[in-house]
Image 1 (cartoon, helix red, strand yellow):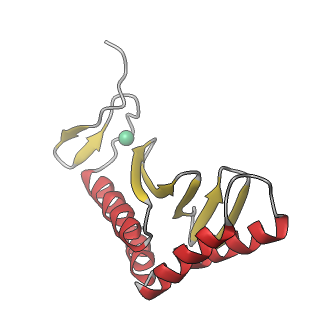
Image 2 (tube, helix red, strand yellow):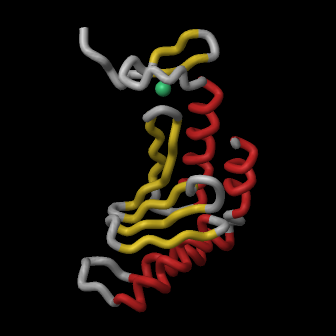
Length: 137
Ligand SMILES: [Zn+2]
């Protein structure tokens, strides 16, 4: 039988045989809650949670992703071409939009899309998932 990335619940542990770190159900639930909360704040974004020696999360909209950065804050990336960090998801997206404008890349992407997302996120108080992420540490 080969290793699988399908997580198996065993008491407090929720981990796959391919990982084997002994990741916890609590970490999975926190990652899922953070991803869902941020996805609700960012129209068009879908939550993504995965396991790889720990539970991780991000939200994704096409090639645009936003997620927690190692240590603190958030990172926004577009297709691994342009990335930006910020204290909040909104700040990361704003910096991404600014970087995008500066680079004026030819990739099929409209900086106005990011600005629209940022404006909507600001209205819906993007600070909530930031607090949750800190509590998860
Ligand atoms: Zn694991």
